[in-house]
Length: 79
Image: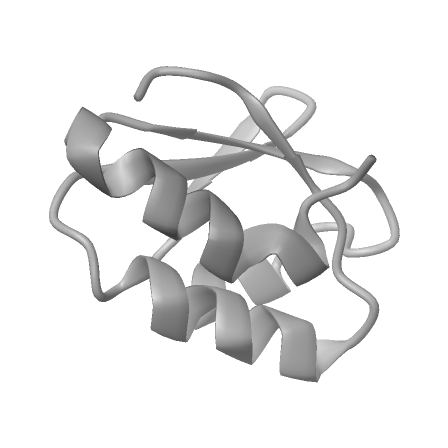
């Protein structure tokens, strides 16, 4: 999966759930806000971002994990 996925957090609980879910998968996950990038498995890194903005996630996880990951992240994926 090398798609860009829009992510929007409502509160710190969303960030915590997001990190917990993403950390279960092998692969590199990056979260972008403009040109600023952090490891999406790092709650401290994410907390340094502007959480009111829509963020972008990229990943290189296995294709077989993509559908399950998208289902689990549905509450924070921006429309």
